Image 1 (cartoon, rainbow, N blue to C red):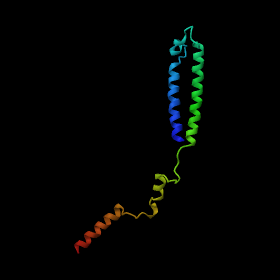
Image 2: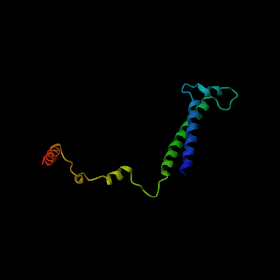
Image 3: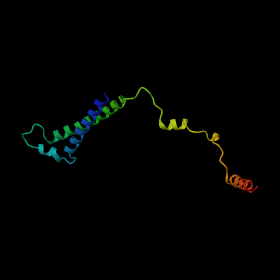
Image 4: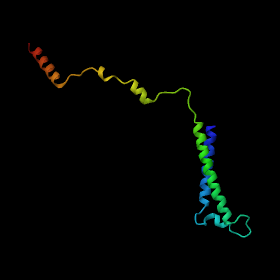
Length: 118
């Protein structure tokens, strides 16, 4: 159902682009070419039709987006995110071994030299 909704969204988007490109806010554009006297629909009716088609397509796009969001495929097994896995496997900072500081290192070097001198 999700794939069908996405395909319909693309079709509606393409139709909407075409309808909007045909329109011209000043009454010109492709709609003005239908101004012949022997036409069933005049320029005004064509403009009304294009405006109504735009509104219907916009409503259809909104409805299809809501429908598609309701049918997004979700896996049955909820896997934890990578961040939560890293937080759970993190080492507790209070259990990290103490490394010697610079004064401890200097004292250790000094004691090694005294042992060598004996």
